[in-house]
Image (tube, rainbow, N blue to C red; front, side):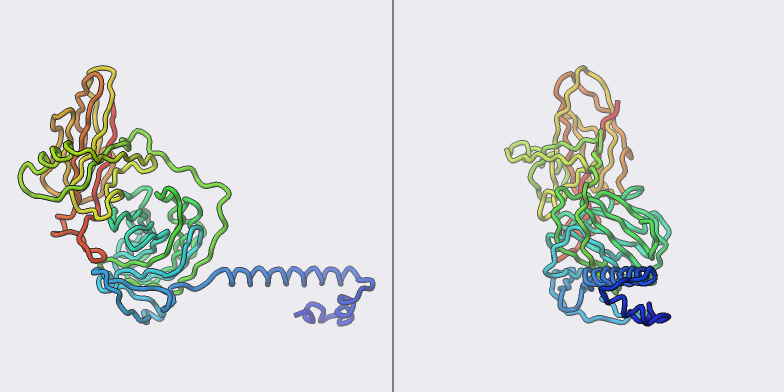
Length: 397
């Protein structure tokens, strides 16, 4: 390589390595050579920093029944890939990595839902970013959700913030890159310079954790997976506090589900007789997501909060929910539903009047999740549980 720079004047090659006088031309050649070495050095550093992950000896695959299963790489449309089918092969958990700030790239060909879990504490608690290839070029093509205790809370974290478009197709290869720095997540598709998604993640504090791959409701193929650590951000983005929402509550223990009449009233009596209420307050998340507070989300919970009014007046509660809820103000029922509601949750879907009295007013919400929609519950890692459980509420004049 050195000789190539000096191929028009071999004598310069000798002078470049002597301590004698060096011509301007020689100095220019040295600078070029030095720059070349620097570029090679940077390229070597990059290659060394970036490494292939999810090699066969590095991960464990689990079924929906939480069984450790054997998996071999497969060939799909010309690429050697790890295949998960969403049933017998549900998730692939990478062993021995603790990631915090990183860039992961991979090729994906999925049928229904295919994604990356990061900052994983285990197979039940992680941040999840996934694609719906069958819904390419719709606002549901990419979605981010925090997974709490196995609950796939997709109805809460939706467009326009947590879902977005991407030009992808079912069972066709596309390239995805995920960058996590501090509390920020960026998602790039097919090498485009601008991210398709650029959002704060709903993890507080940011503790880092492992990586996993997951497929739901059909096959997903993952290939050419690489990992590169990123520098610690100089300053993390400020969490986006959700103003105006009711995010401070006291919640009861979890009670068993029951379909008998007046069941919610019986649960309220049980909760009021106990002294084990827990205070919750997560201002960066407008949703009261009960799955976050119970290791096995599959029951009924009571939430209560006190609202002070300086006079007797009627205000309004804008709300939405999943599953079944009952809303009670000062002992009077304002809203109740019997049929399981299972669809995206948005602020202000429902409105009820709040006849406040002067002084303290107790607002109570009794909530059951969506398990009954799936019969005994949604099957994940050996148990039937909720995927969604909770509500969103805001008081307006």
